[in-house]
Image 1 (spheres, one colour):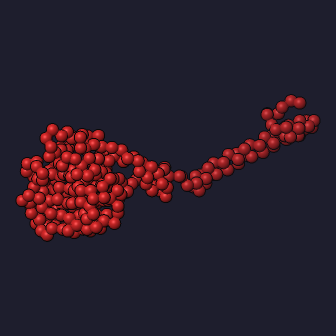
Image 2 (cartoon, one colour; image 1 turned 60 degrees about the vertical axis):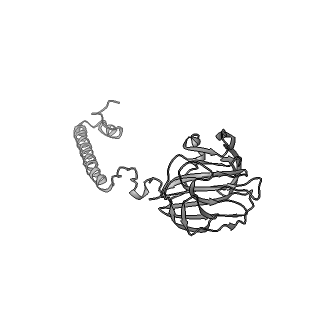
Image 3 (cartoon, helix red, strand yellow; image 1 turned 30 degrees about the vertical axis):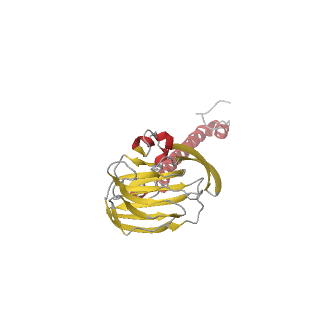
Length: 276
């Protein structure tokens, strides 16, 4: 069947009816009707687009959350937590010197770093870790002292005597002068069975002196010690217990030393930090 102006099939059928008198009028009518319908559809489509634009909210661009100043990582400050152990540094001995009462004694004859496997509680579970431990044979008498001079600082460590219930050792604070047994300093005593006595060596001074106290832990178990030095004042804490304060210390700055005093002693978690 011949197409009439590309009209749809239903319209073509009607327009192609064999009615010569009315065929032209029918074609004109349907063409006009089709034009009206197409125009109406175009107008409706144009009106619908603005309506959708008015009712559709544009999603804002997503932005990365900006940290507030309080959320940013801040540098660690003294008091925020225990600093890392000095014994974890492979250059630990470069910052220390040893003195022995017996001439010719080498540092490694008395002092060395060893590793000990320990169990700790972490997130509710018992796990094993390796600690770097400073081992002192205790013989001959002497000490390991810092090259650095300290004042207004805090330091701490753990210690134990693995073989001797009456083990003897200690810490020298504010050490000055020539190396000898024992140099001018303030001593913190670890001599079992009482520990924690504080007293001056040589012509150093402090007032009052602190007496030692009995420890509940066996000598082979780890004990903790925290020493706070500020000016002429030294305060001592052992196993979380306040052992007291000495004032009027002289000198008020100097080296720190660990004593070798006859018995094998071990130290770990040795840390320090300045006080502001």
